[in-house]
Image (spheres, rainbow over the protein chains, first blue to last red):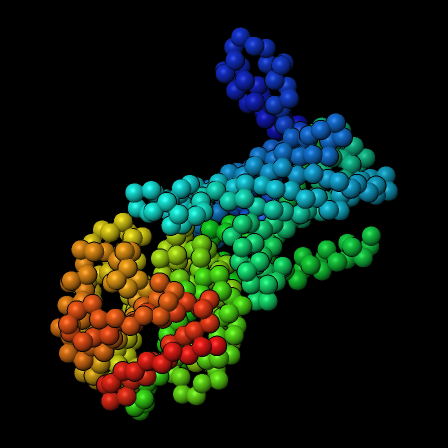
Amino acid sequence: MREYIFKFRFVFLLLLLLTSTKISAQNFKFLIPDEAIVQYAGSIGYFSGGVGYELFGNKRGNLDLLYGFVPGSKGGVLNIATAKFGYRPWSIKVKDWGKFYPFNPAIFATYTFHKDLSFKFPSGQYAHDYYYWSEALRPHLAFSSEIELDAKKLLKNIGIRAIGLYIEANTNDFYLINYFQNTSALTVTDIFQLGIGMRVKF
Amino acid sequence: MRIFLLFLLCAALASCNHFEFSPNQSFDRLSLKDVNATNLKKLGTGENDDTVSFVLTGDTQKSRDETVKFCKAVNAIKGIDFVVLAGDITEFGVLKEMLWISRTLEDLNPPYVAVIGNHDETARGKEAFLHMFGELDYSFVYGGIKFIGHNTNSREYNFNGQVPNIPWLKNELKPSPGVTGYVAISHVPVNSEDFDGKLIKDYTSTFAETPGFLASLHAHTHNYKLFYPDNSGIPYVITSAMANNEFLVVQIVNNKISFERVYF
């Protein structure tokens, strides 16, 4: 795991050095992510992976950048880029080995790469307001619960600070529009889709 | 706290089918397959049915609440053989919208078939439709009448001259034993700007030249209209959108077609 982290940081630093030979890489330390994330489902891929940054002084905010993939056998092939901003307003201490974040709202945007999905419907083919949405870019609203295990307590010195396990329910603009116009035929559970994931915090 | 955790666990377990990989999935573990073919098998051939009655509706799009009422209204009418959904099943062309609408339509007593609409071809809707409902151009015979469901969403193909597929239509309209009449069903009508202007003449004359051609049925414009684009006397009928709480009952007796607007 430590080797993996080193590699991760190495790639990042290399990138920085390549792009800014004059400025010391030390100035860009904030670009080094605080977390590695893997997620199953959750509308951003069959599996997805990426990095997370803890935000604000209290570290309750999170910016996650993820890449997800849906293979053809699961209804793809789709490549999905996700940027997610979340906040953990409540934290509950669980004994001495962890924390529980019961209800964490988040917003995220996904961009799906596929030949049939365009950012904007071609203006030559359609009048200005013929279709009013973007096929590829999707805004989402999400809520998650996370349990954070203190790795220093549970696992000895392997370079990990904590491990967070979360379950997340998300919806998007398409589903919300469908829901609000049809509140008797659709339920909230219809429009919210689940994902589970793990954050390795180092 | 414990109750909350328990609730969370229950919610997660109760919704195991809620693990979505993307709204743009063309199918998922639980999505339906070949709805049209399955329902046509249920319908049968209607060999001894001398009164063919069916319901024409379309543009369900975002009108799920209305679709619930629609099912009740259709079930209350006696003698309906089948229901045709003439396109725009979805607004955004996503799988979930197709699944939600078919969940509601399962309450219908008569079987239903769907024809693709322009909204269903946005995003990956075409692939989802192909997987869930079946071919975009297809036909079936019931009570001696051949019904030809086909794709007329020309704008989605940037008016490439191949939609609607006229050679395919001509082939489907060839005389065949046991068929006395023909009814064409598609989403976009010829009087719409979304229909390929280059093909209008060929399309209408293909129908006009077919002996026993009864009517061309459509949706798309959301408002009922009966019109005659040429002097062949063939009626072209547009059904109201689901949102307008109206559908069309079509009846064919002795190769004579009649239409009745029904409000619900």
